[in-house]
Amino acid sequence: SQKIEQNSEALNIQEGKTATLTCNYTNYSPAYLQWYRQDPGRGPVFLLLIRENEKEKRKERLKVTFDTTLKQSLFHITASQPADSATYLCALGGGSQGNLIFGKGTKLSVKP
Amino acid sequence: DADVTQTPRNRITKTGKRIMLECSQTKGHDRMYWYRQDPGLGLRLIYYSFDVKDINKGEISDGYSVSRQAQAKFSLSLESAIPNQTALYFCATSDSGTGGNTIYFGEGSWLTVV
Image 1 (cartoon, rainbow over the protein chains, first blue to last red):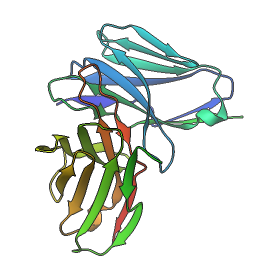
Image 2 (cartoon, one colour):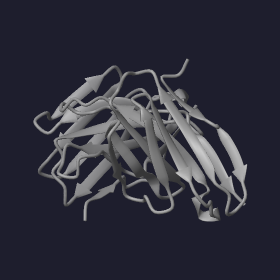
Image 3 (tube, rainbow over the protein chains, first blue to last red):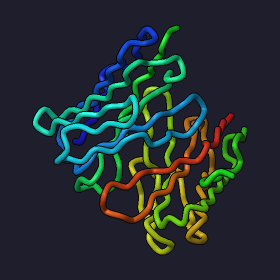
Image 4 (cartoon, chains in turn green, blue):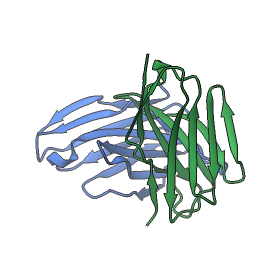
């Protein structure tokens, strides 16, 4: 069956450092991958989309990579700030099952 | 105003009661979804609708039903609520493009079944 793993439930880093979150998947060939941010008690908010033929996508301090050979996406936040503290979800789409499949998320805490 | 509005935002109900969660959207999207989120289990799809006449079961539809009253309205019903349906419920929308559908979520409805 299709499986998505965000291999850290929680990640703690110091302000100013680069946060790197990982999303791995198996038994799936997505056409694209998305990253969402979720604050406590709120709905997830879309951040970035990267397609299967793209290696890297950037938006301000955010960078996403997508390696379809490794079946992995990396999500980087450079110069992290306490305001970046949230749960980050990856989601795969465009495959045979038609709907987005979400990972369980990684809770990022950025300490001052 | 929010693009995707859910009511109620919080509800406590008793086991066996019928409860309806309502969702309306102003984004003009054809597709609407209901998800539930539980700690450690992530977001799971309950039902989805690609237009008013197209409703489909998701990963965990047992114990739930839905109604798409209009393009902008999609309601979720628990006919006879049970405690393990206690969760945070999200309504969401997306457009019908094929280039990678961004999902827009509502603020969530906290449901507690006692």
